[in-house]
Amino acid sequence: MATTASERKSFFKKISGKNKNEEESEMTFFDHIEELRWHIMRSIIAWLVAAITIFVYIDWIYDNVILSPANENFVTYGALCQLGHWLHIGDSFCMPPVKIDFQVTTVNGTFTSAITIAMIGGIIAAFPYIFWELWLFIKPALSPKERKYGRGSIFWVSLCFFTGAAFGYYLLAPFTFNFLASFTLGKTGMIQYRPAVNDYIDSLTNLMLGCGIAFELPVISYVLAKIGLITGSTMRKYFKFAFVIILVVAAIITPSPDWTSQFLVAIPLLLLYWISILLTTRVEKRKLKEEEKEWH
Image 1 (cartoon, rainbow, N blue to C red):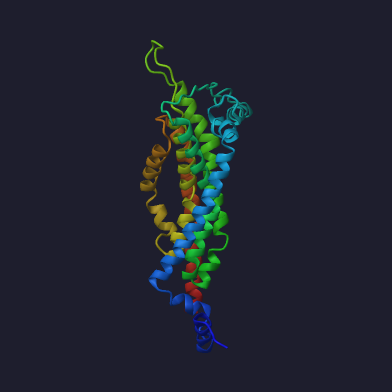
Image 2: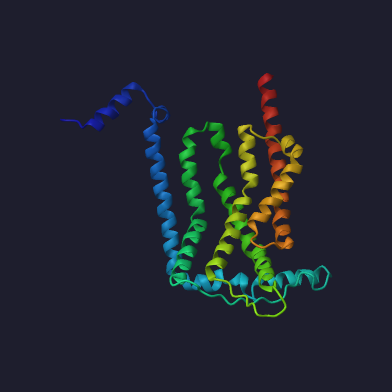
């Protein structure tokens, strides 16, 4: 019976005793490029499926998700006001109702806004799967111990990202849009605040994506500590420089010059920085214990 080239190749691999790990180690540069291409293709497909789904329900998402932070009935306004009363500080946390009249200044403004919402929303919705594909590409190059440490990484990375996006949506966006809508220029009243809907969507998505990425600080610090690039003591030593960087990042993330919005971003970032110090210190202690065991 005639055998195919693939069957002969498989047979010779079996008699040579090569396992799967050895085959992976013999992958050429172009094999890795081909593997990366398929991971990227699957990620793009997942992103497009999420984006198309959002575009199909764009009217509901626009009314109930996109416009909500600029609506006077948004849940954050009432919750913060009740929190201020519960803390017995009066109406300190109560923000005045905001009503923004949006306008479209270009012919294709509504269509491009819908496309932007679908594309950015697709990235947010498909983020866990995209990171999972990235993990599958990196995983073969890791040692068994590194793979063990990487368990649960998809969950923690996704949790930090969605927590940051929720922070930007539910807390930072209302403060930002409330400040910008209530800020007046001149006393004649001739200037009417009617922002373009594209500018509003860009500001909202930048807040969500910016906070989502910024909240990955503990995960990034943990990975760098595992690699050995940073330690808890190093992070403590350079805290004053990190503090300045955090203030700059907070100013970049927030589109408004309002110090309140920048303060709201800086505080959780500082908290995340100290959580990162705790994680890296823990990693550092584990490495010292492992080194002591090896010496003994």
